[in-house]
Image 1 (cartoon, helix red, strand yellow):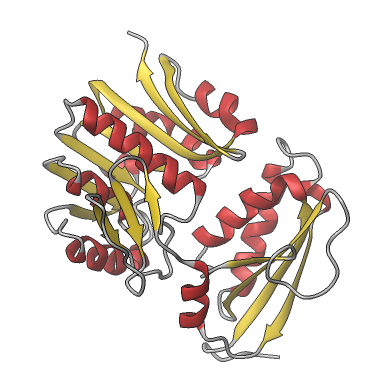
Image 2 (tube, rainbow, N blue to C red):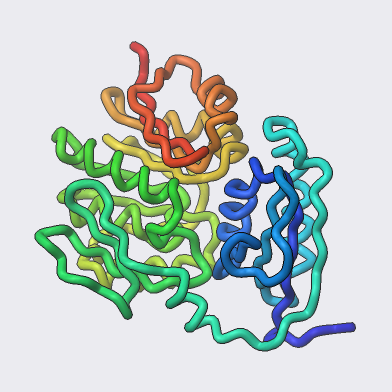
Length: 298
């Protein structure tokens, strides 16, 4: 039955437990406002040991595309996470959802590193001397709730505190959070990039609202950018980090740093292999997720 653009579809996934975090991240990057889990939000019996049940709500017009993209992603993920090849995906109609209430339930203030605090606009606590970044949740990844965003922010803070960071590039900026953090932490020249033009207005709004209006915001991929930067941050998926390895590496200044994230611990070796002549200078871990700081070996 056809659906109008205001109808929402529940995308339900039964998958190996080890793949749950990766699938959640993928769905958020595909535009799902949130991902529900059997352990916390879904009614009904808990899944059997070793399995996870997830549910994401997407616009009906986008549901076939997101479901197909998820099937392709799971097939790729099966090469590194056993059990993904037997994932089950079903689609079902859902009644109208109060997304504002959903946002408020799933987004809360997060203190990150020594100096940062990320909060939604409806719940901004006392700053306690921290740099406060207020992010309006929307159809873009990057609210400080996900492990990869938090560890990227921690690594950004450490690099800026160590000195020598005058220019930076945020690849796959999404909400603009990482670019805003770079700017507010004192990097004088920051560029943010995303290949999804639909998220750019939200990123612009967040940047301007957080005193980071000087950040340049561009549409495109790493290969479309010219110049080099002291720090390049790419919080993407592992496949994108591998495919775009050459252009990402070329954007890093001679003594610069490449911060890559969005990969699982089981994907680290494959990602690093795509960057010959680079070494892991630092690793930040949160659950199964990894953020790596890469530096040239010579």
